[in-house]
Image (cartoon, rainbow, N blue to C red; front, side, top):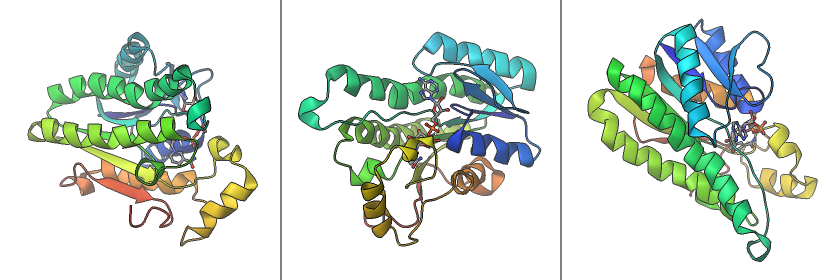
Length: 231
Ligand code: NAD
């Protein structure tokens, strides 16, 4: 019984993989260039379903059946609506939303055989709150919520739970790019008044993947310092 984390070579995905590893549980990460030290890594681009299927095959040959999948790989490509090209819109959807569909589909195939499983999607507080310049990203992250709730209904009778974590602003390469004045504004609207750490998202993901969360499905768990309250 192993876990596969997509985009696990840095940031939140790496913290999630380390959390499973620290608990002594078998875990594989997908990466695009180089596997992180000390973790079993498979190369995979989330926009290519053949690569996704091959990554699962490789991970299962090494670790046994994958019964938990964390769809974490994601990108931003911000632009105001009138300047946002259709390619730019589609590329973010293809990576963040269709990418999660690809891993959920291949993961569910193994989980259905085992009659147990955990699908966890990494969404964002932006899914519900929206963010100027992030129509593509917000659409992809809101799509994950609808997909998770649909799959929770579809797969619940087969022992598979499907949940979402919705992080707020977490210190990673992705948020390094956010301009300082915008970061300050976001933190002003964050009751805890600071960025989160990748390990704080990882703890929530591992809990959702554990037996302790056996009666939780279709849930959206905020890990956002309170920034999304009321949305
Ligand atoms: P990051 O940029 O450090 O990591 C993104 C990961 O996704 C990397 O491992 C990258 O290789 C991988 N990835 C991107 N495109 C891919 C593709 N086509 N195929 C395979 N892998 C691909 O950013 P992060 O902050 O660690 O983000 C991880 C997830 O958390 C993302 O889905 C992001 O949207 C989400 N998130 C982040 C924040 C934040 O504040 N950092 C907040 C909310 C949600």
